[in-house]
Image 1 (cartoon, rainbow, N blue to C red):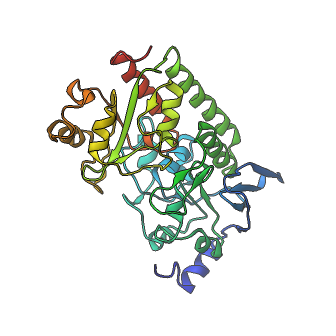
Image 2 (image 1 turned 90 degrees about the vertical axis):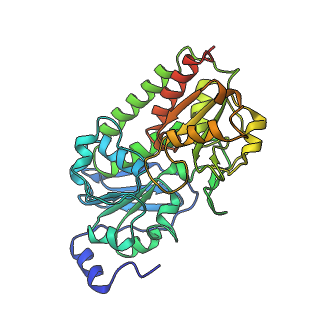
Length: 346
């Protein structure tokens, strides 16, 4: 990867009054924020093995993943965002107007130069790989320029990202990691009360969606993308949260990989009751949209005779609902509705 900034850019960033971030850190996933005495600043928090200090509320933040952007938009912070990037889906309902105010510098991962052109004073991401070698840029490179960075604790708490791919879970994800991210970002931006209110709203939605649902007899499969070597959900990521909340069973809960690639022959052998299919608008893999996925399932000789395919038991989810984000709540709601519709809600 080319150098993240020229000396001229470095001076421009520093002269813009960007805040200092120090990185030392131990213990990935500890994200408890500790505001200081003067108007809540500085804010210091542990984040994915680093200690992050933000001296003042960000005014030109660049969230470089959709999930992170949607949290900040939900907190009413569109006017504090200088840009956004890396989207798989249309923006969450209710955020269209706010999102339209934020420049999108790339539908996929942007270059570090594009991010720096926005002169950010804070950079956040949903995935550790976004702010690592091979992604936008390693966190250290932003830190050297005095730009604080933040990665969703849902992608580092109880998760091993060292083996490539999408990593594997050493412990089951819970919505507490997502709620912690909401509260962290709200504190960083000086609006902790908004974070508490958003968390309360999300908790209420999960409770309402799961109320009266006992899907202990139902088996689910989550297909994110790619028809040739499909990415299917393992036990313990965001689909695991959805499955656990509703009492169902993921047919691939015997793997801790986040999104293992599994053959269709194995899928057909496990014959899930319901197929939860990702409805993505990006064009990075084969069969991104739900329509393309269903077309494949109903024409492929290996899959077309599966019970869920013959009875058209499909639940469509956005990609963001299948990743750890505030839209995982949307996933709980939609899968619960599907379980009721297909007679598997108990």
